[in-house]
Image (cartoon, rainbow, N blue to C red):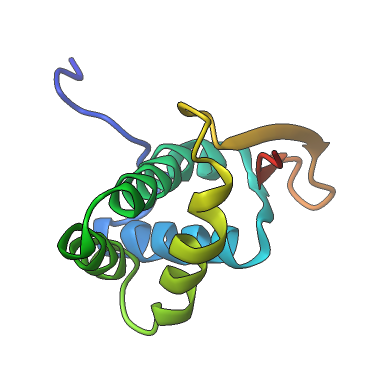
Length: 127
């Protein structure tokens, strides 16, 4: 039984899976869309939306809340993520101030030629 077990294993160990998730979320915020497998896209989509909500709520708060939100985002995204955190708080989060959720879109693009894996395009919703 899978009681209280959430997320996807993706046939990887925990450290590799976490580092790949962070890298793909960083690339999503940097390029605003990425192409990956459906399983990987579904695994990073909730975390990316939580980071956008964190940034959105921090912008509404006072200066202390903004600094704390930036620290939490930087801690989650890992080392050398300063420019991506800045883009998240200055460019991406203000776009979604009036949107209650659903900041990303998952579009299936068909199978990959090499191994027939189902591919998807994960992108930020433009509004």
